[in-house]
Length: 154
Image (cartoon, rainbow, N blue to C red; front, side, top):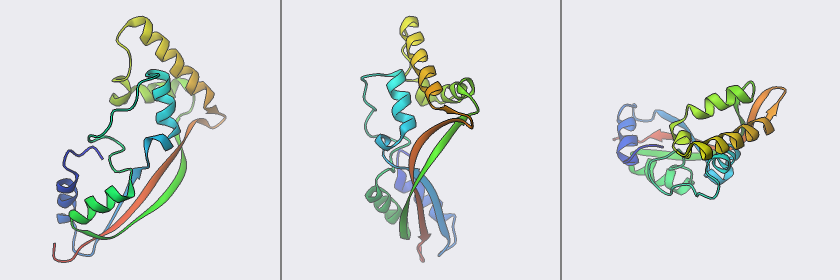
Protein backbone atom coordinates (compact mmCIF):
# COMPACT_ATOMS: atom_id res chain seq x y z
CA UNK A 1 0.00 0.00 0.00
CA UNK A 2 1.13 3.52 -0.80
CA UNK A 3 4.24 2.39 -2.74
CA UNK A 4 4.72 3.71 -6.27
CA UNK A 5 6.81 0.61 -6.98
CA UNK A 6 5.45 -2.10 -4.67
CA UNK A 7 7.71 -4.86 -6.03
CA UNK A 8 10.82 -2.80 -5.25
CA UNK A 9 9.47 -1.86 -1.83
CA UNK A 10 8.65 -5.44 -0.83
CA UNK A 11 11.94 -6.71 -2.33
CA UNK A 12 13.68 -4.28 0.02
CA UNK A 13 11.68 -5.69 2.94
CA UNK A 14 12.55 -9.24 1.81
CA UNK A 15 16.26 -8.38 1.74
CA UNK A 16 16.03 -7.28 5.38
CA UNK A 17 14.72 -10.73 6.40
CA UNK A 18 16.69 -13.94 6.80
CA UNK A 19 15.88 -16.66 4.24
CA UNK A 20 12.85 -18.58 5.51
CA UNK A 21 11.75 -15.74 7.81
CA UNK A 22 8.01 -15.08 8.04
CA UNK A 23 6.38 -11.94 6.71
CA UNK A 24 2.97 -10.80 7.98
CA UNK A 25 0.95 -7.83 6.76
CA UNK A 26 -2.63 -6.60 7.06
CA UNK A 27 -4.11 -5.01 3.92
CA UNK A 28 -7.59 -3.74 3.13
CA UNK A 29 -9.99 -5.65 0.95
CA UNK A 30 -11.61 -3.51 -1.81
CA UNK A 31 -12.93 -0.07 -0.85
CA UNK A 32 -16.48 -1.13 -1.68
CA UNK A 33 -16.30 -3.61 1.23
CA UNK A 34 -15.37 -0.88 3.73
CA UNK A 35 -18.33 0.78 5.41
CA UNK A 36 -16.02 3.47 6.79
CA UNK A 37 -14.68 4.64 3.44
CA UNK A 38 -18.11 4.46 1.78
CA UNK A 39 -19.74 6.49 4.58
CA UNK A 40 -17.01 9.13 4.61
CA UNK A 41 -16.95 9.48 0.81
CA UNK A 42 -20.76 9.68 0.68
CA UNK A 43 -20.72 12.43 3.32
CA UNK A 44 -17.87 14.52 1.93
CA UNK A 45 -17.91 13.87 -1.80
CA UNK A 46 -21.37 12.64 -2.83
CA UNK A 47 -21.49 11.59 -6.45
CA UNK A 48 -17.70 11.58 -6.86
CA UNK A 49 -16.07 8.23 -7.38
CA UNK A 50 -12.91 7.12 -5.67
CA UNK A 51 -9.81 7.86 -7.80
CA UNK A 52 -8.67 4.69 -9.56
CA UNK A 53 -5.18 3.24 -9.39
CA UNK A 54 -2.13 4.69 -7.78
CA UNK A 55 -0.42 3.98 -4.50
CA UNK A 56 -3.36 4.24 -2.13
CA UNK A 57 -4.74 2.30 0.83
CA UNK A 58 -6.43 -0.20 -1.50
CA UNK A 59 -3.61 -0.89 -3.96
CA UNK A 60 -3.15 -4.40 -2.49
CA UNK A 61 -6.85 -5.19 -2.04
CA UNK A 62 -6.95 -8.01 -4.61
CA UNK A 63 -5.40 -11.41 -3.76
CA UNK A 64 -3.98 -11.82 -7.28
CA UNK A 65 -2.15 -8.48 -6.95
CA UNK A 66 -0.69 -9.50 -3.58
CA UNK A 67 0.46 -12.84 -5.02
CA UNK A 68 2.11 -11.19 -8.04
CA UNK A 69 3.85 -8.45 -6.03
CA UNK A 70 5.12 -10.66 -3.22
CA UNK A 71 6.27 -13.43 -5.57
CA UNK A 72 8.19 -10.92 -7.69
CA UNK A 73 9.67 -9.44 -4.49
CA UNK A 74 11.09 -12.80 -3.36
CA UNK A 75 8.43 -14.34 -1.14
CA UNK A 76 6.90 -17.82 -1.22
CA UNK A 77 4.09 -19.63 0.61
CA UNK A 78 1.84 -16.60 0.25
CA UNK A 79 -1.55 -16.90 1.93
CA UNK A 80 -4.40 -14.46 2.46
CA UNK A 81 -6.86 -14.97 5.29
CA UNK A 82 -10.04 -12.86 5.17
CA UNK A 83 -10.81 -10.81 8.28
CA UNK A 84 -14.08 -9.05 9.10
CA UNK A 85 -13.84 -6.67 12.04
CA UNK A 86 -15.30 -3.31 12.93
CA UNK A 87 -13.01 -0.27 13.12
CA UNK A 88 -13.09 2.05 16.12
CA UNK A 89 -13.02 5.76 15.27
CA UNK A 90 -13.33 7.22 18.75
CA UNK A 91 -15.33 7.30 21.97
CA UNK A 92 -17.95 9.66 20.52
CA UNK A 93 -18.89 11.45 17.30
CA UNK A 94 -16.82 14.56 18.13
CA UNK A 95 -13.63 12.55 18.71
CA UNK A 96 -14.36 10.43 15.62
CA UNK A 97 -14.70 13.62 13.56
CA UNK A 98 -11.27 14.79 14.76
CA UNK A 99 -9.79 11.39 13.88
CA UNK A 100 -11.38 11.34 10.43
CA UNK A 101 -10.29 14.89 9.64
CA UNK A 102 -6.71 14.07 10.64
CA UNK A 103 -6.45 11.92 7.49
CA UNK A 104 -5.10 13.82 4.48
CA UNK A 105 -7.04 11.58 2.09
CA UNK A 106 -10.22 12.78 3.82
CA UNK A 107 -9.39 16.47 3.94
CA UNK A 108 -8.58 16.30 0.22
CA UNK A 109 -12.24 15.39 -0.39
CA UNK A 110 -13.59 18.49 1.38
CA UNK A 111 -15.05 21.15 -0.90
CA UNK A 112 -13.22 24.48 -0.86
CA UNK A 113 -16.32 26.69 -0.99
CA UNK A 114 -17.29 27.53 2.61
CA UNK A 115 -21.01 26.77 2.24
CA UNK A 116 -20.40 23.41 0.55
CA UNK A 117 -17.67 22.58 3.07
CA UNK A 118 -20.06 23.26 5.96
CA UNK A 119 -22.72 21.04 4.35
CA UNK A 120 -20.20 18.23 3.81
CA UNK A 121 -19.03 18.43 7.43
CA UNK A 122 -22.66 18.37 8.57
CA UNK A 123 -23.20 15.16 6.57
CA UNK A 124 -20.04 13.70 8.09
CA UNK A 125 -21.22 14.56 11.60
CA UNK A 126 -24.55 12.85 10.87
CA UNK A 127 -22.76 9.70 9.61
CA UNK A 128 -20.61 9.59 12.73
CA UNK A 129 -23.57 10.06 15.07
CA UNK A 130 -25.39 7.29 13.17
CA UNK A 131 -22.50 4.91 13.92
CA UNK A 132 -22.09 5.89 17.56
CA UNK A 133 -22.79 3.16 20.10
CA UNK A 134 -22.36 2.93 23.85
CA UNK A 135 -18.83 1.68 23.08
CA UNK A 136 -17.86 4.46 20.67
CA UNK A 137 -18.06 5.08 16.93
CA UNK A 138 -17.61 1.92 14.85
CA UNK A 139 -17.64 1.15 11.11
CA UNK A 140 -17.62 -2.23 9.43
CA UNK A 141 -14.47 -3.30 7.56
CA UNK A 142 -12.82 -6.18 5.72
CA UNK A 143 -9.10 -6.90 5.45
CA UNK A 144 -6.67 -9.60 4.40
CA UNK A 145 -4.12 -11.04 6.81
CA UNK A 146 -1.22 -11.75 4.44
CA UNK A 147 1.44 -14.27 5.42
CA UNK A 148 4.48 -15.23 3.37
CA UNK A 149 8.01 -16.53 3.73
CA UNK A 150 11.18 -14.96 2.41
CA UNK A 151 12.45 -17.28 -0.27
CA UNK A 152 15.83 -18.95 0.19
CA UNK A 153 18.62 -17.69 -2.01
CA UNK A 154 17.20 -14.20 -2.40
